[in-house]
Image (cartoon, rainbow, N blue to C red; front, side, top):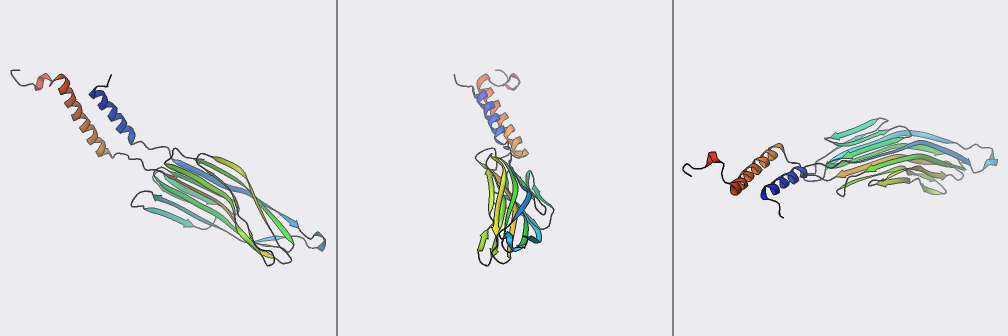
Length: 253
């Protein structure tokens, strides 16, 4: 049995009304915290104690939100210093916070792309014949609602260390999560010197990004026109099936 034209009209109205709904936002949070280090004396019998000196501490933060359809408008904020940075456009959010040895980022996207790149930069000098090991705890929680969304983050260490004999040593290690995954763990990386001091730069970072597809949401005027059009079509179907209402019939009929 086929549904009546009037029932088809009601079903179509429901579908069209639901089509404008916005899916849950795509979100992700990331943090790198509890920074610590250990020094190892590679020549314990030489009478010199190992040491490390952090010569400069600063942060770098970038937040940006951009449209994913023409005209691809975007807005961005940048700053340095140990503080918070927030950018919000509608229900889209890009947020970050940096401290001397810990960083956090959080983004949320409903109809745009959002990103937050947050880092705390440590420059250091390491004593001769010394090894250093760095550790930090990482937490990432991602959530996306469907295939037309994305949420991902990476957090950990980056940078490099230079020794005149041993050359350049990478300080790059991180944890990653995306989609609907979560990860909690520890990252660790190390460097060592030969017979002279070495210099390095360590970035403690938490980078988050998310984007969500654009759902067509009718404007209020479009909704009024839609309802008016459905009413006219419904009236026409009613007259076709039951005839015109008695008050509208021609006299003498």
